[in-house]
Image (cartoon, rainbow, N blue to C red; front, side):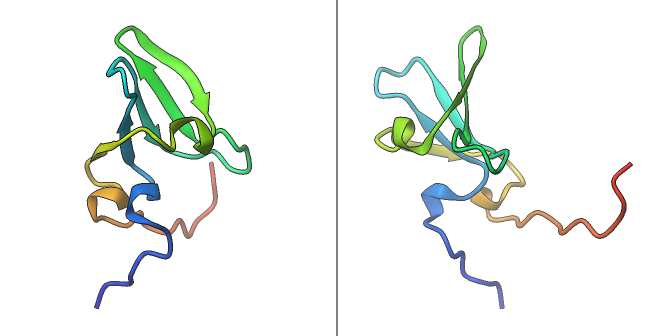
Length: 82
């Protein structure tokens, strides 16, 4: 049996939100412990990272394939970093 997520589905890694004006996308791909967890991009490329408060009102429009938000847990790393 699959474990139930401990965070709302909208806040799982790989969630994609779109700005209300439709010009930017934000992907939840955190780099802890920094509070700016959402990678934001516009039509020309990355515009940096934003905190939860900035994108909280943006609607969820999808998920990155093979991410937790798409229903696939990321494997736990059990080795040495190279």
